Length: 398
Image (tube, rainbow, N blue to C red; front, side, top):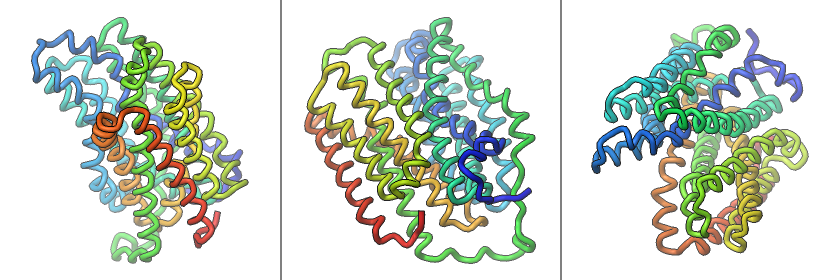
């Protein structure tokens, strides 16, 4: 099978491998947030004590921690043993570990299944990131990368709504959502092929990557982690922000987060055209500028309409900013090292998610919502300006 071919943007959407990789990317949201609607019901099923209260609250972030710890090892294995087997094995483990909460009797056993789910997610995300670079290049690489961001947002919206409906019937039923990938497993088995390896690759040592390429990948992964940390202030702190403004209804929080995901899903679809028109630096400036405008709106206006516009701006800005980090990192990496780059990209996202509340919560407690929102807007505005200045001197083409 041919790999790394330059497709037109429209033909990418007819490639079943691209569709498979977009579906794989959507599992990121399913892993973390799908059980959120079930947490109150789960808490009522177990004795009310400090230990159980703690275990309930770490069920959501537990997979992220496992991803951060396991992604580097998955990257090494993917480069040595292949991507296809890792992706399919990770998908099977995802189905088993994710849906195990339907029947597991204790909170510690459910927590263990959540950690196993994180291992599965590390396998899936590392393998699919490497395959993205193996299968596509140029504009097609950027198109599929943005399609993955859109799939994460729109898929996450569907998964969370479905889990919420199931949780109204019974808290354990939310775990049934994790069995849905069983329906697409045959499709993955059919369309995902292992990229051909160069003759003698197994017997020879991998050639070292140039220092400039390594620095670029590290810089892009750090940038992705930083932007994810800033963005993740929304799902972790938005409910408390709304409560502080007098919006106590969970429906308001759900609607605001839904707007965040919906705007992100739509904006990501426009990324290839925006990038083609204004380049990587201009696209990042646009993304960071939208995020800055969203946080600035929170600082200056707390009316319902302003909050929804702010969420839409932040969601759209994040979805415009993220695809470039992934596509440029993979484009700068030789095929024999894309597993490791995929691991770094995967780990940077989940590390950013994991660290975000540890930084945002003390900042908000010390400075308050108003000053913290202004600070986030200023940081993102500066990031947009820097991205424009760096793009002018970048040796890497569009």
